[in-house]
Structures are given as C-alpha cells and as structure tokens.
Amino acid sequence: MNVSLRDCTDKIYKYIKDAIIVDDWDKVCRENTDIEFFHKTQGLQKDNTKSITDVLIKNEMSDYDNSQVIMFNPMGMAIFDMAIGKYYFKKSIQNNNFIKL
Image: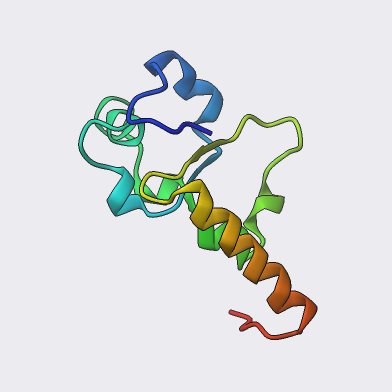
C-alpha cells in the first residue's frame, strides 16, 4: 500500500500492472501521484484498475492470484476512514443489512 504521492518508480509497474486497486480513480490520478505517473508514462487507464467498491461489494479480489503483487492506492481515503468502513461493513453483514449489486 503506498501512502504518499510518489512511492514507486516505473520499474515496479510490470509487477503491479494487472493488480491495482484505487479508492477513486479521479482523485488518485492527479497531481503527480504514482497512478498519474503510470497513466502518463505506462498508459495505465481507469479500466486497468479496480475500485475499492469492486473489491468490497463485487468480490473482485477473488480475480487475483494469492501470489500476485497488488498495489492499493488509497489517495484521499485516510486509514481511519477505511477502518471505520470495515467496522460498519462487517456489522452490516452480521445484521444481514446490506445491498447486493
């Protein structure tokens, strides 16, 4: 999980190009972030990534192999927000109170 604007070099792209998760493409693909860098230099597109919604709601994490390197880029989503979101997500499952898409 990268947590700053620029944690990676272009050398890592070949390892993560098929497994990039973002919280929000429009927020993360801007202002010299790793995602914007890969977008400009490697041709990364929104369709090449999964969103946090894809992973949590649509269970698309199962698309990845267990040995695959996955880059999670939570630009704009604080770890606190993620922890609170997980808490309420688990509560909604326990109470069978969630929307299936």
